[in-house]
Amino acid sequence: MKAELKKSLDRIFFPKSVAIAGVSERMDNPGTFLLRSLQDMGFSGDLYPVNPRHEEILGLKCYPDIVSLPPGLDLAILSIPPRAIPPLIRECVTSAVRGCVINTAGFSETGREEGRRLENEIKEAIQGSELRLVGPNCMGIYSSRGKLAIFAGMLPMQGRVSVISQSGSMASLIYVTGMERVLQYDKVVSSGNELDLNCADYLEYYAEDDRTEMILAYLEEVRDARRFLRTAQKLRGKKPLIILKSGLTRSGGKAAVSHTASIGGRAEVLEGAFRQAGIIQVRDMAEMMDCAAALYHLPSCTGNRVAIISSPGGLAVNSADAVEWYGLELSELSGPTRKELAQILPAEGTSVSNPVDLGFGAVIPGVYRRVLEVLDADPSVDLMLAVGSAPASRDGDIGLLNATTNEILEARPGLNKPIVVVLFPSSFTAPQISKLHSAGVPAYITPTAACKALSEHIRFYNQVC
Image: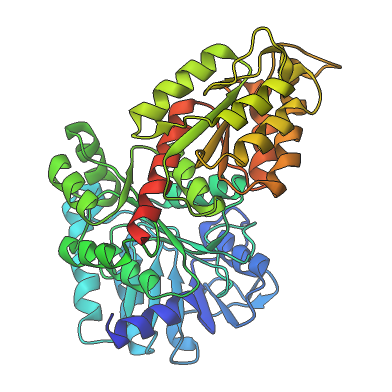
């Protein structure tokens, strides 16, 4: 990427000085929320609240305008009414501000002439200057190392994932749901209408960032598509790029226009281009998080032979279907493996073929763990899909969900093969899913979700080789 662009984005993600325009004494004010978020993150640079009606906000001196601040500010965050934005942008240019986040909505995404006119005024104001813009109509920036956040309560972490989202709410949800799966973030940008900086700029920046090992993106329009896809192609086999592209249908495209002023491209053209570039395309946020969890937590794997371990017979059959649907294969277990399994499992109501049916053997403490260890040692097995639960309950443990989860977690440190867990879509399984995620074991509520994630995991690592 060009050195000037990298320098601009460095200042935006790692500012030494930040002004927030639009703060007030109301704690539910958007600008005040942002000020609190920086304080929660422990931002240690110069922090300047801006509002001519106040002397002090949250213990900080409040300034009447941008031109009252020291010149050369790294970042200004504007959370004020749309009509006030162009004059304040001109102040930013006069004061040599380097970067600006425009949180405010009410521009071209409204479809109204006034919104388009205001955007044109902003473009005219920054022409010939060094000022670069994020937004408008966005929630801004999360930067773990830069100590920036898009909402109060976010904290710095040792992150490896970076996010581009043209929707502010999706940026927040990706952060929250990723945290539940123990994904840790380095950077998140809510890019909004992308009046200046766009998704291709952010992708180039993340591609060259040593701390970013995986990239997630929610896009309604791929702006500067050729440069975006060219960068994605360079990432192939180096950093997983998972994209949720919305607006692919007529209804979705219409919604996207009113959301971020985006016009989605033809679905079949984009999907073909994504495949050629090695992009992992997903249909919804759950699928995005499912694939991300597998790629984040599982060890590398290029083989596609799956061993299924299950006590519920129906879920085992459903899992076998899902394995084939997603281009995986059922492992052909070796003779020694089947013999060893036969010594562990009861003779009746079980199967030592693949899927391995534990039957009522899953009720016996320690059996689930021993079966996992035996399958892990079989050279014909590349991955394991463990279906949790058993046909019994004990001491309030419905379906022995807690017991089987604990045995999976006890076995995990000694296993060499990637393992994912399938439970079932019920509130009963939520505590176990949370426990598995917390231990870095990807857990899913359907076999299809698990096998989709495994197939993308394998496809990525086959690109590496």
